[in-house]
Length: 145
Image (cartoon, rainbow, N blue to C red; front, side):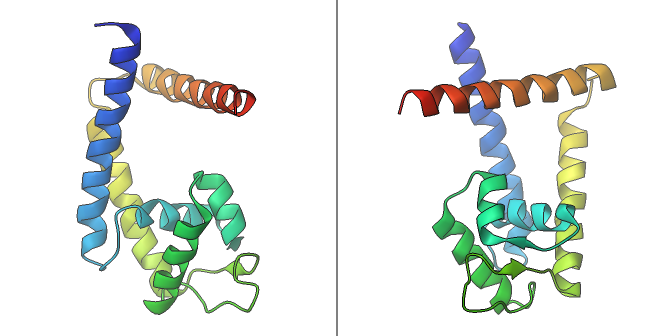
């Protein structure tokens, strides 16, 4: 298999199965699987974030972030926020933190299962390599827009 095919198929497979796992996890809360990432990032930040910052961190569409935050607010997972919705702070409620912690546990269990057979050194190298590839691809795409 060619390098490009192996790389692309591996990423697509990882993405497909993570989306499936996240969708199953979030279904119990009546939310989309993609919202798992947003809750995890909000919880991991340990402080309030704006929707703009959440979009920046997750590299997701502003409109999707806004829809997710509206759902979180409707479900009581984040405190209501003001008129300047996109620039207003998003703060998890106690219930929001509890849901986020459950999502974090599921993500940790998923990564543990996915990394079976990898030494800690190899795991660190994989993550470092993926981070470098992601950065380089973003820069390449931005230069060629």
